[in-house]
Image (cartoon, rainbow, N blue to C red; front, side, top):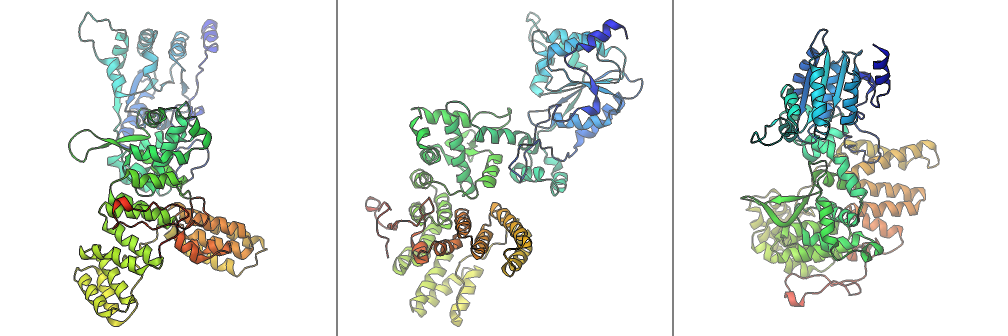
Amino acid sequence: MDEERSARQAALADQPRPVRWWSQQRLGVHPAIPGRAVAGTEFVLPTFVPRFHDAQLRKIVSAACTEGASPRFVVICGASCTGKSRSACEVLAAVPDDFDLIFPADSEGLLAALAADALSPRTVLWLNEAHGYFDGPVGNAVAASLLRRLDGEGPLLVIATLWPEQMDALTTRRRSPEQDNPHHKGRELFQQALRVDLPRSFTDDLDAVRHVAAQDSSLAAALETDGENLTQVLAAGPDLVRHYEQPAGEHGIYGSALMAVAMDAHRLGLSLLPQSFLEAAVPGYLNDQQRSQASPNWFIGALAYARIFIKDTTQPFQDVPRPSGMGALPGVLRLADYLQYHGRQTRWGSCPPPSFWEAAPAHLSNGGDLSRLADAARARGRFRYASLLYDAAARAGSLEARVALAKTREYAGDRSAALRLVLPAAEQGHVGAMVMLALLHNRAGNRTTSLAVAQAAAKTGAPYAALAHGLLRQGGRPPKADMPVSPPSYPEARHESEFSDLIHSLSGADALTVGWLSRLGDAERFAYESAVAGAPYALARIALLRKWKGDEQGAARMYQLAIDAGHLGALGGLARIRNESPDAYMHRGLETDGSLANPWTWQDPDSPPASRSTARPGQAPAT
């Protein structure tokens, strides 16, 4: 090597380095979603799951790196976030250790490397997102120079990644000879390449992913979100979260608030989000200054921010296809799957603000949606909003909402209202309503009527109805609910035995020992995991331990968190730790700030809409 060539190579901005020196992050692999460990900013690289094209790539690269092989140009082609860079990085394992790799920053750097003869034999030229090297003013010169090098001595391996449309743009001839083609050398170069196409999804490899995901939280989270579009979720997820958590621009904060509304709506049971509901619910997610500084077109700007494409593959807010035919449903959106997952992981202990609950009955018309939100409000002790939502759902035709509202009225001590509310649903054949009607008559001493209604319910074949009928005939006490108890969810089932053992050992241990404190930390960790998975009851058990330890403030905080996460059973414990009336809490519920609700009036779906009460604070509750 002459001195002039050595000097040119030493002056290069992009130096060749040993192939094992390069990290996947440095070579352009996208950081992946962190799985269940949401916090933290470290680069996350999930376990690699090879597919058919990876075996094909390995054969090509192994052959290209053998002694005496000619230079080889390989193009890995796939849509955005389909795993191109990761597949390219993984195949470097087939490159011998004594190879160098050079990764030019831009087309000028590549041209300089070619001019300095830096692509000597036993070198890998890395061209991630290769379109940028050949599309600019010097792109044609770069292609011509690389063509000349490919005619030279090997082994030399050029690995490029491209989108299919970019590949087409570089290889397709112009429609007529008269049209100037600035990429004619690029077309000649890429027509010589060995092209390996990547599929858009993991549909054919899901079993392999599930096997690996048992030990990899990133893959587990991606499978939970959208298994088929695994790579898109893994790669675009962090950018979706960053777009939400670090809003930028005039309308970013309002777009982020829209996404927070959507996260709460999805985790509480909504699948489709009317734009009018999103707009009405947003104010409670903003502070006074943010609301006062909003421009007249804030909602248009917020929607634009929330509909921007991330990594050219996904949007935070997405259109909803029509149930049949073509096109999107007008005025309706859904949140990206990974943001739904992120919301469940990070907002599980947040109770939505008043604007959310008040927007729902005003802008939602589906009885099932309204009923699910009402259930969520009731589970969080927000009985006034549950009343509003059950009323709206019952008016929309939901028999389940009518039964649920009847149960809440009975629980509040108004048995006559419960009887009146449940009767129309029972007459329409709703089994749960029929069983509840039988129970109400039984408690009122009307045994003949109770047995007749229970017998009619049992004839439907519903197992619970038959059980209730049998118990009433024997004079026994039927179960309190009209549905079987659901099985524990992960990680409640996984940790229940160990959690119970911890609670038992803590209850009889010395609170001052280091071991006790350590076991309390383990129990709290299990409780939080359970709450994230949708089973927050364990938080109330931690509250009991904190109360026993003398930490009443911590106990109150845990009770409140359990309620906000959906464990209504903690309401009485919160009242007692505050030295207030449990009966008042169980009848009136909480305000959104967690304090005891002021007296309010129940909604009644059987009253004329014009005379419907508005459930304002300060009104006396119905009895």
